Amino acid sequence: MTKTNIHKEVVIIGSGPAGLTAAIYSGRANLQPLVIEGPQPGGQLMITTDVENYPGFAKGIMGPALMQEFRDQAARFGTEFLSAWVNRVDLSKRPFTLETDEQIIQADSLIIASGAAAKWLGIPGEAPVPQGLGGAGVSACATCDGFFFRGKPLVVVGGGDTAMEEATFLTKFATKVTVIHRRDSLRASKIMQDKAFRNDKIEFIWDTAVEEILGTAETGVTGVRIKNLKTGAESIFPCEGVFIAIGHQPNTAVFKDWLDMDEIGYIKTDRRTTATNIPGVFACGDAQDAYYRQAITAAGTGCMASIDAERFLDANPIEAPQTREASVEV
Image 1: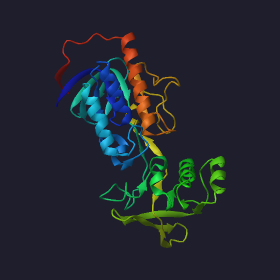
Image 2 (image 1 turned 90 degrees about the horizontal axis):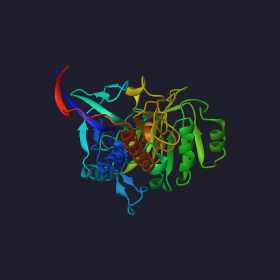
Image 3 (image 1 turned 180 degrees about the vertical axis):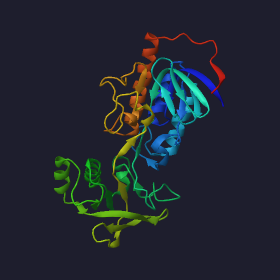
Image 4 (image 1 turned 30 degrees about the vertical axis):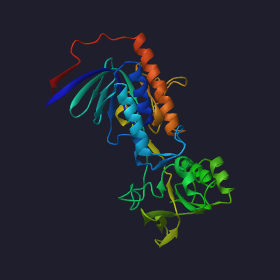
């Protein structure tokens, strides 16, 4: 099979707020970055409806529209885009090697902005509209979407710290928050449990699984079909919004043999910069941020990663090959 061989000073993996901000800054620095878009170009904002907390958009903006603005701005400064999935990397030496199904890419510096994906239950009604109710009453981010559920009864699914954080935050808007958990006790830390138990607006349904999310794209969520795991009894629990809070999984598996990560898979970076344990490799956005997970913070670290990469390249140049693009047999 013939694969195209590409060489770039800066390669960015990921096209969410972090990756595209890195591209904007790298493009303005005349580094001609290449952005490798994964299977979901634009990141998680592509399945978000109204975005009201991103600065500069007083009336709000649709998630896909915001990401198109990011992309157009990056393209304006010379960013190239490649729709592909990186399935193998070699970070043993510079230039680093990335392999897709059709390309072998060499990068003098690498910015990882591959993001993280919310874990989902895999039940009917959970998928994005029009297949399901995602974006029409189903969410995995209370900070992003809680405002839209003011005055409504809500369900949070989960039993860990994420679920307790989401439930507590949502009480600022909801009339009532019901936490549905598969077990008879929470996995959350004691301090998070105590905070939730003390909140009069939070109730719990134990030993229960959510089997289906009910409603339509026109009406929104109307309830959930639940099953008691001890008795097998099923029932309909009415609500007007469902937040899935069973954690996130960073999209970093391809780097696991190369980069330092925590036990979940978030890439560890220097506390002052976006540098990883391999010089010339930088990580930003949700691939390394397990705490904030916001578009604005992702964009900020994307800016940092680009500046870090530019300074690294200035201090550690690689002589440019005579042929920047060719074809090789593999």
